Amino acid sequence: MSVHSFLISALWTGITIACYLIGLGCKRISRNNALANPALITIVLVSVLLITTHTPYTTYFRATWVLTFLLGPATVALGIPLAKNFTHIRQSLLGVGVGLVAGSVVSMVSGALLVRLFHGSNELAVSLMPKAVTTPIAMSVAEEIGGVPALTATLAIVGGILTAITVKATLTFFRVEHEHAVGLAAGTAGSGIAASHVAAMGDGPAAFAAIGIGLNGLVTALLAPMLASWL
Image (cartoon, rainbow, N blue to C red):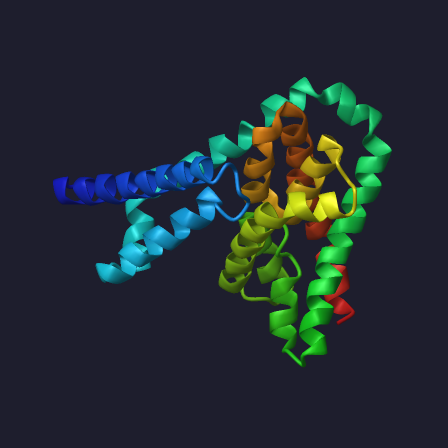
C-alpha cells in the first residue's frame, strides 16, 4: 500500500468512526430515543460527506476495508452471550424454532406479495424476499433466485435500521415485553443492525438476537428458492 492510499484509508476510516461516535452521542443526548439510531446517523453523515467531496463510493469502500474486515469478528463476538445463555436457549428451543420459521416465512412472502400487489416485476419481488437476513447471505440468496444482489443489500440495511427503530415500540404495543422475545424478533427481522441495538439490553437479548440472525439466514437460504418458484 502506497503512502497516499494509506492516508486516504486512514482518513475515511477515521471519519466513519467519528460519525458513529456522533451517532452514539445523539443517542445519549436523546435518552436512547429509537430515532437516534447510530447506524442511521452514520450512514446519513458519511453520505453527505461523500456527496459534498464528490468521492465515489468505490473509493470509500476500498478505503474503509479495515471496518469491513472487522464485521466478521464483530459477528462472531455474538457467540459470547450465546454461550452464556445456552441453557435458556435450550429450554426455549421449540418456541424459538416455531417463531423463527414463522417470522422468516412471513417476511419473505409478505415482501413478495406486496410487490405483486403494486404490479412490480418478478425481479423486484424476489430481490425483496431475503431482506431480513444478514447482508452477505441476503445477496447470495437474491442472486440464486434471480434477484438483484445490490438492491437486496440496500433493502437489508434499510430494513435493519427500520427494525432497530421500531422493534421495541412494536412489541410493546402487542404487549410482548420478555427480553428474549425482543432479542429473537430483532435478530430475525433486522439482522445485525437491529441485534446491535437490543444487545445494549443485556446478554439475554443479544444471545437470542444471535440465534435469530444465524437461523433466519439458514431458513431463508433453504426456503427462498422454493417460495420464489411459486411466484
